[in-house]
Length: 206
Image (tube, rainbow, N blue to C red):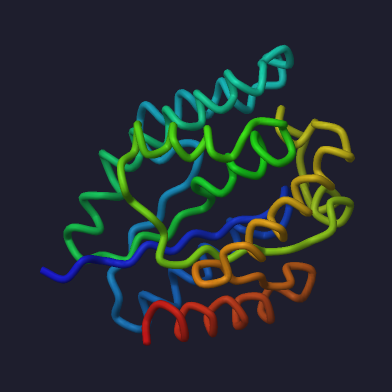
């Protein structure tokens, strides 16, 4: 059986990832592709429990190292329980965040070394790599202003941190152009969806 495809949507807080994942999943379904949608952190029973710990504002003393290990624990469970089996079945796996989030949030913005993060990933998750990572780019202030609820622990980090996150995503995408695409996430959601779809058609489905 032909291996499936793995597409990840990334970006700063409030960049519209969840909305665009839903739009892309619907469009792929209309094109007769079988899609499995996952999110990080979470996506499994164990991962959802880890998610609660990571995003709980009561855990404000959490270190970056602890944060990384918890994200990677959730990711490892998701890869082994859902992503790898789905790819083996020939499905398209569409993820709301993946490894790039750790490289940017805990690495570039948080101060940990990207090489250490990648080694931990391969040790716990194996060799699964996205076929395409679409970064939805928005200024930090714009993204945070879109969050229509009280901020979780990650969203509550200082504005300077979120600005580093944005710069980190752009730097990462610029260094890995063969696998990454940047889409302006500040536009109307329908325009963003069309831009994402064109990247997916050109770079994954062609």
